[in-house]
Length: 216
Image 1 (cartoon, rainbow, N blue to C red):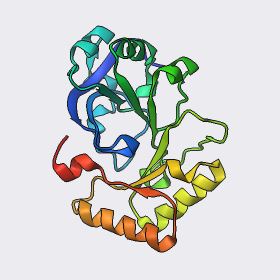
Image 2 (tube, rainbow, N blue to C red):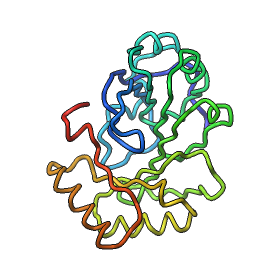
Image 3 (cartoon, rainbow, N blue to C red):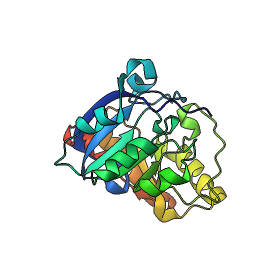
Image 4 (spheres, rainbow, N blue to C red):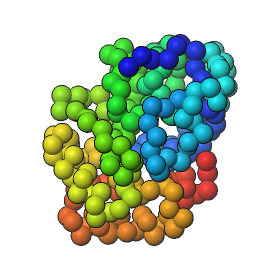
């Protein structure tokens, strides 16, 4: 897949608490890049789908927009791996930032980028996304953890369990979270936790923390 140019189209840059995955709860700068090749039905950032709706920014523009007091930077999207992230990641490392990249896992990062990024948060898309994507992580060690969005606990948990076994994933690297578009988010989280316990699954269940505390 052809990657976008070294110029970045940015939907937004902001500071918040990291709400997901193994870095949950940590303050972070967020750089949301515009452009995505997927159209997940439950996507909560549809405004980042199209790169031309983002602001054209250079590496320097981006680094100058960060809160230097916060030493984490989360590069998200959209799908950030549509871009060549290496120049941006190099600049962030030179300034001493810890880097998290959130990706769908459909595009493999280069070896050079893997050496620069501290955490790859990989969110494979289940059929509940409206996509049927063929993944192969069997010989891949770059994902730090795998994060799955659960819409229908009974159906989706079986799909996750099959995915984990077929891909040979370490269950300790698997995180489940409820669909963020649910209006009754706390009830959705409770239902998911109960279903995981009922099925005897070994996966972590985490909320999107920013939803619970009312942050972006």
